[in-house]
Image (cartoon, rainbow, N blue to C red; front, top):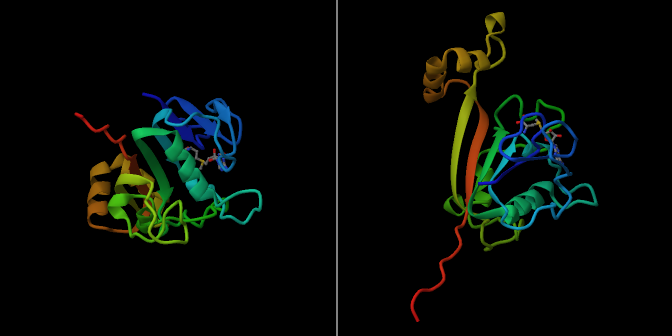
Length: 200
Ligand SMILES: C[S@@+](CC[C@H](N)C(=O)[O-])C[C@H]1O[C@@H](n2cnc3c(N)ncnc32)[C@H](O)[C@@H]1O
């Protein structure tokens, strides 16, 4: 099983870390916006994109295509059939989504309807970002959202402390939908290879 972490920074998951800046965890220094990436097709079982997609620009810089669509296309290309893409981004409701000055786009659950067949609205897809009727890239998805409870807590008591020191309380608060949505956890599966017809 081989995995790739795109935008790994200082916290690589899996085997190969790729980032635009060099660092001890970075095996391949590469700007994700530059395609094709330096990997052959169908190399990886899993690709991680953890808190990186929100840094990708729209197609405003003339030398690049729309950052998100070209990156999703490359991830799909380097994944094996049946491989998984694991994404974490801030949810649009989170104060971090637009609060972090280096973020250039935000996401919510609807974003992934454009990329996965089981959520597909049938309107947008990679091959036809502003067209109709093309196939989505991935076949299955799962989406989970966690919560944040605001920043004005006594003694700096934030959701991080609740989540890590009082995990049961945190789970109950999430189940009761207290606070705002914080991070989106998305898993997308590339379609498995079609079996060749059997018999003659
Ligand atoms: C918020 S950090 C997340 C790092 C790591 N994935 C984690 O979870 O801790 C975002 C990372 O994405 C990288 N990044 C941003 N834009 C990139 C690009 N165009 N190409 C490659 N890496 C990029 C940054 O250098 C940074 O390491």
